[in-house]
Length: 253
Image (tube, rainbow, N blue to C red; front, side):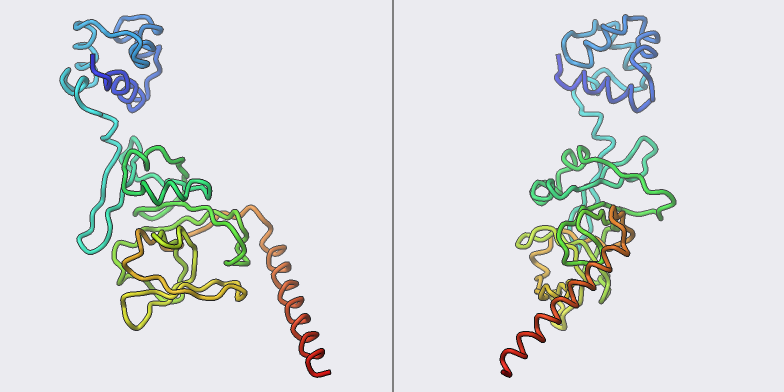
């Protein structure tokens, strides 16, 4: 029997918001038997297979040969930029996939794989405009007062010419990994300058050819008191200034 059958039955049941008990009653089989079908432990009879296909308005051939859960996966392609893999919910609305810091290395390898994207955790953000969104966890203090561990919800940038100066973006790059920076488009129009809001970190250049994906900031979720983060940043600046003054005094002496 097809290895896809169990996954297809489970997918169709969940898409139609049926419990195993409800579907087993419709099919007139024990719930435990349905569970065995979904796990691939046993195979339904031809009669039961036909009833499953009819109930979900599909064909026996589709149940046996297709990965029906791929109906929830799409790939958006733009001719002058990249390919975006997305997932959609049961109402055909795009999900907001969440890329945790520890998952970012894997994301850079598989960001164009719809099955990988489907497996990412999902976030739900109320009243968000229509579009393609993704959420990234940021680490470090380069974008203070936004604290480390914040989650940046971003909208997908389809074309590089849509990038706006002095706005913040999450950029997936082949050289620098996934970074969250303030961006300036360079006059050569083939590279960007990435700036940190924390002046301790120097700017650096990102070539267009090294960009895998780019996402514009839409909103963020922070788990730290913003005022506390700002106060800490100010204290650090004062401390740095004091160290510089002390160093200059010693030089003058």
